[in-house]
Amino acid sequence: MFTLDPDLRNIVKRTQAFRQEYTAMHFEKGVSGVRALYQALDKLPVEKCKDTIIDNKNVDIESVDIETRDGSIITARWATNREGSRKRAVLYIHGGGMIIGMAADSDDMVSRYVEATGVSMLSVNYRLSPEFGYPIPINDCFDSLKWLVQHTTDLGIEPDHISVMGESSGGCLAAAVALLARDEGIHLDRQLLIYPMLDDRTKVADKSIVPFLTWTEQDNITGWQAFLGDLYGKKDLPDYASPARCTNLTDVATAYIEVAELDLFRNEDINFCLKLLKAGVPVEMVLYSAVPHSFDSLAPGAQISQRAFQDRCRIISA
Image (cartoon, rainbow, N blue to C red; front, side, top):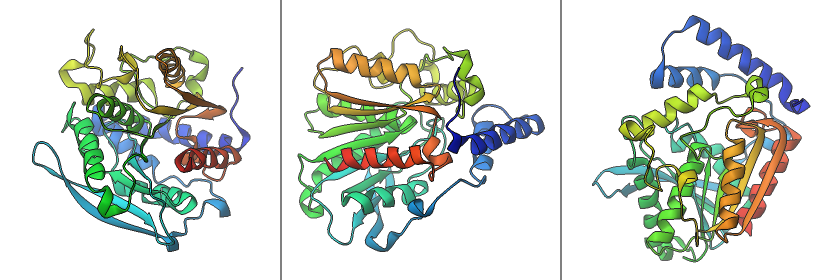
């Protein structure tokens, strides 16, 4: 029988109770309903400790405009360590089910990574679905990678030391960027996929984890439908659209994949690790027991969240 990590019990209980109360009073469905729910959930207090208090004294963040292939301008966030950034960088892609969030929302987390590692980060403000469906969010992220590669000299970055990192739906976009980088001959050092959303076909395979889900099956369907549009439910999809379906993973960047035991994405993430290994791609997979999706955002002060942060920093710095 699955149980929650003691450090997560209170916040998950409050989150689930709030979700039930909110959905009972609000009948809005689809993307607008999910957006409203998660905007309300964001106002719930998280459980922090002194080790998670953000000190930005050594981190500078500036906005940079990036022109995409369709002529649009997206504004990314470039974070550097004032005490001396290392000659490597990470393209960071935020989560939100393809339908929620912006780069600035991740400033605190990105600052923690940059402060701890000295590695610079470019946080992508990709356009959200359904207003901008497949392939636009992927293109925005890949065009941001190309911008980073083109500006390595100006930024003091070694072109062979660029990685891509994404959380949740950002993990899907990061995996797609890794595939595109392979296909277009751009070297990536690593891909860091944090409890990634990889497979549009996912349903709850294990009913015993339903009480712990912080991103539900219906949330997931809403996100994938918004992203894929008319492609949703099709038997065949482009490899980049749903990385778990990709039939050729050879020669993609070395992967670090984080999996949460009580997550809707658990099985798809483990299966993706196996597919990468079968394709000859080195993988480090870390399975965090007794925690749900986005556990570290819910309780950054939890011991397991601190361990996850250290693991990510270790890979970012490697």
